[in-house]
Amino acid sequence: MSKLRLRIAMSLDGFVAGPNQSVENPLGAGGMRLHEWVFPLRVWRAMHGLEGAEVNESSRVVEESMANIGATIMGRNMFGGHPGPWDPKNPWNGWWGSNPPYHHPVFVLTHYAREPLKLEGGTTFYFVTDGIDAALEQARRAAAGKDVQLAGGAHAARQYFAAGLVDEMLIHLAPTLLGSGERLFQGIANLRGLELVQTVAAPNVTHLKFTKR
Amino acid sequence: MSKLRLRIAMSLDGFVAGPNQSVENPLGAGGMRLHEWVFPLRVWRAMHGLEGAEVNESSRVVEESMANIGATIMGRNMFGGHPGPWDPKNPWNGWWGSNPPYHHPVFVLTHYAREPLKLEGGTTFYFVTDGIDAALEQARRAAAGKDVQLAGGAHAARQYFAAGLVDEMLIHLAPTLLGSGERLFQGIANLRGLELVQTVAAPNVTHLKFTKR
Image 1 (tube, rainbow over the protein chains, first blue to last red):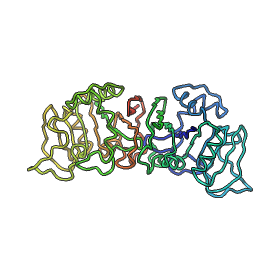
Image 2 (cartoon, rainbow over the protein chains, first blue to last red):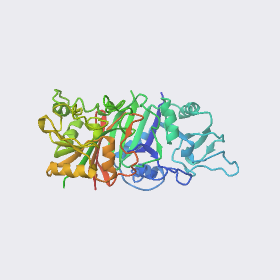
Image 3 (cartoon, each protein chain N blue to C red):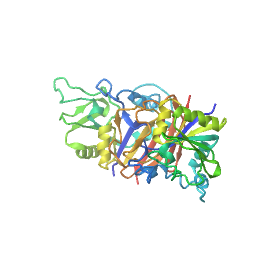
Image 4 (cartoon, chains in turn yellow, green):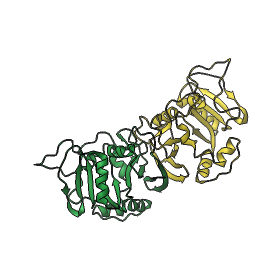
């Protein structure tokens, strides 16, 4: 069965975004520190059309996390932090540029309906207004047997997590503190059957993989 | 120079004790889950006079964390959760029993003065009422060149951490959520110069060791 796989970077004090998130600074103050480990990696740079050669213990983790993914779900903030209804005359197409690094269907949880946004390289954003179950069903169908990636942000991740729908969770634990911002596990008191199955130490990050028993 | 070494177990969501801590349940609701990885270990069981033979990746981490320690500092809750002045007629000697597993001087941060409490096996508890700097100074003197262990709980750890006095931090990260309770890093927004230097994966725990650059 197609799995729902959450993959998210988190600080040692439990934050997945810093305070004062905005359209200009979607990760919030200090939030970029959660992702510093990934930027030098060849696997990440190639995905974003950049050169770069670093290969370390994180490389295999990132490669495995991208394997067998047929569709992605994300929250509205992660698509583009859009605060209200879409303006059809001046559409905001998110921060992912003209050729997003997904190359498969992406389902965006939002309160505002919008036509699908087809971009280069095989990425089409679909805007789902009827909740997490509907988004998951559509994403599973689009994934055609492959798994569905839950890309974040915190609010979307928490909703699926609280509903017990996450089958696999990969936390990229950054050895830094943010002090405030968005907590991944705010209001969640147990792992919903997920168990730690793999720990990978790498430069500037520890990867913790959980799966259902 | 003698280092101050914090060693503490923490949940994935950042708690070092669960909610509703009391004299009967000093770790709070669910707090015992943070320590389950240690109970089967031979090194821990021997320290507490119990038999048991398990040796795994945690064993060396625990052994190293106990090496070269000449004194310990702990908060009042960790000594025994005593809520007010000591009763000289009916003294409460904490939860550590008649032969505590320290075997060296232990300095307890408290607001209530008390004569030193000398127990079997080389452990004497000293009650320090004039703050964290005084306790550290006394502990360093008692350690006679060895390092000082900061054993917790959360409040004591945070005070030393916020003051930038922690030279080494070993977090035993338990793959579980507590949802509420005492957060280690509450109100602390940076690591005070500590950097991740070692990650050890072991059954039911990930050990993260930080030191000053």
